[in-house]
Length: 119
Image (tube, rainbow, N blue to C red; front, side, top):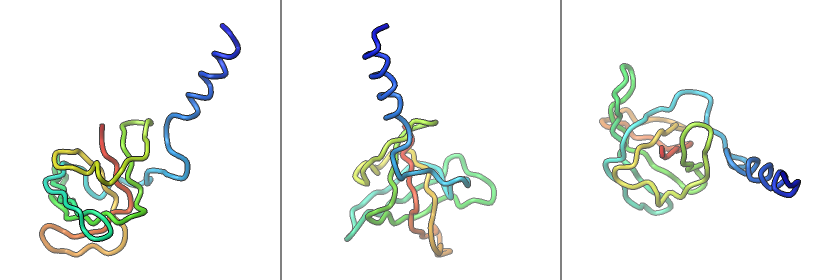
C-alpha cells in the first residue's frame, strides 16, 4: 500500500473520536431520555427530558437549562463530536449531566454541565 494512503488513514483515524478539550463525565448521567419540549431562552436553551427507561432512584423528568459554553456533544460509543444546542430538538434522545444545585420540584429543574445527543 502506498505510504501516502497509510499516512492519510492514520491522520483521519486520529481526527475521529472525542473533540479536543471535551470529555464525557466519568459518572452516570443525571438523566437519559427523550426531549419532550425544547425552546430558545435568552442566552441558551431550555429542554424538558422525560427519562426512558425510568431508573429507580432517578428523576422521571427534568427541566434543563443549557447555557452557552456547555459541552453539547453527539454520537454513540467512542465516536463523539461537538454539536450545536440547536440540535436539542423534540424527539432527540439525550444523556444529560447536571451541574450546580437542582431544584426539587416536579419536574426537577437543573442546569446542564454536559449534554450528549445519542445517535
